[in-house]
Image 1 (cartoon, helix red, strand yellow):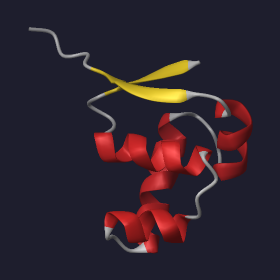
Image 2: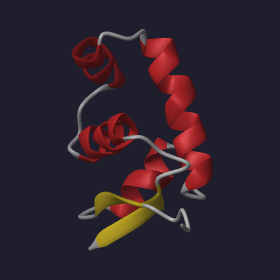
Image 3: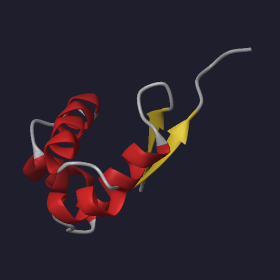
Image 4: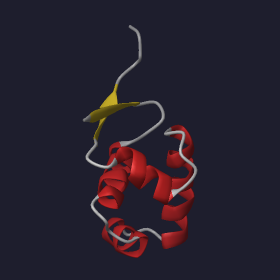
Length: 77
């Protein structure tokens, strides 16, 4: 299943965060890969969970298991 996310709300890096969490990677490993602090990653993940209308990592994993994410450009020209 594919989930489209408005590109005005998320970045390609955000999609990588979500994909890595779904793959079971720990926040510490994801943060190290992106060369950011774990606290910065956790704060962004909380924002992403709100965008996806889930309360936390556990609910995210339950709802979005076997999902891939794509950015959708909703800008009208």
